[in-house]
Length: 146
Image 1 (cartoon, rainbow, N blue to C red):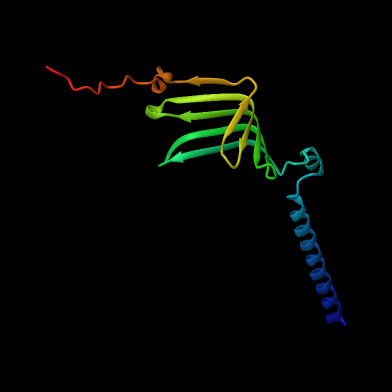
Image 2 (cartoon, rainbow, N blue to C red; image 1 turned 60 degrees about the vertical axis):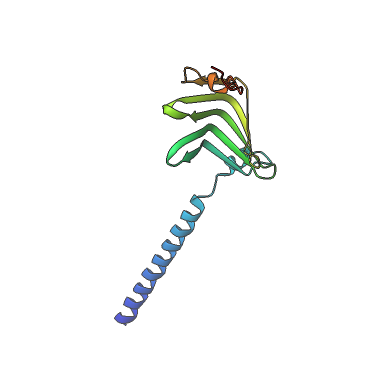
């Protein structure tokens, strides 16, 4: 009779252990799901909403450019990314940087074009930023006569 009681107690402990383990597993799986409040605030066409958005482009280990935004909404159907509070950093030769900031921006995911709007500001570390875009005088094509 004692053997039956021991078996019943062991069976009860095993069932209790299985129940607690199953409950913990199910609870941990649902923990990663977004809260209902977060899902309600997303727009109808928004697939993903990202806070502290950052994209960097490197060329041979050197940072070429970087886009940061307070928030980004990825809209796959329209193939665009809507940005808020945007900062774009462009790295030029000799560690010269240029930054562009704006209240909002849109990235076209197909063409990779970015459009900035609202308090757009440009700042460059280069002393002669626009000099590189000026047309250089053409060399004389006539042979020199001496």
